Length: 213
Image (tube, rainbow, N blue to C red):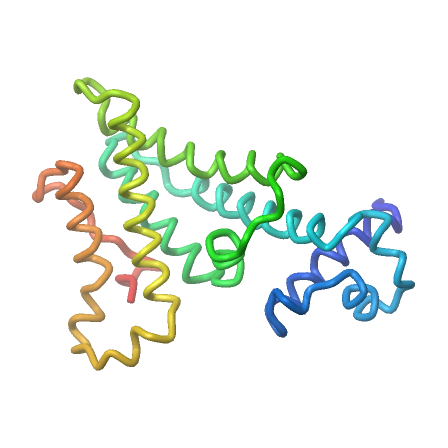
C-alpha cells in the first residue's frame, strides 16, 4: 500500500498535467498545484523543491512513456520492417498523446545538470532508434557517425510529420482530401528511399488498422 506521501507526489504530477493542458505551461506553479489539491501551500514542496523540479518530473515521465510505447512495438526480425514499426509507433504516440509530445519536444527544459534523470530518459528513447538503424546498416561500411546521422534524419522527419499533423495549420491549407490521406505514407516512403530500403519491400504505415491521417 502506498503512503500518503507517495500519493501526494503522484497527485502533484497529475495536477501539473491538468494545469498545463487546461491553462498552459506558464500557469504551472506549486501554489496552483496546492490550490487544486486543496492542501497547504507548502505541501508540494515536500516532493518538489521548485516548479522546475515538478516540470522536470512531468517531462521525464513523458519520455519514459514514449520509450515504453516505442519498445512495445511488434518486433520484426527484418531490419527495415522493424524500422517501419518504429516509425509507426512514433507517429501513433504523437497523435494519441499530443500534450506529452509537446512537453517533450516543444517545452524549454529545466537544467539537465539538476535533473539528470530527465536527460537519461530522453537518451533512452533515442537509443531505440539508433539500435534500429544499426540493424539496418549491419554488414555495411557505415560508421557510427553515419548511423547517428541517419537516426537524426529519421527522427527529424518523423518530428516534422507529427508536428504538422498535430498543428492547427494543416486543416486550413485547403489541400485535397487525397493529399491528406497520403501525407504520411508518402513521407514514410521518402524516408525509406533515403535510407536505401528497396521499394518493393517497403511497408505501409498504419495506426489502429487504418492509414495515418
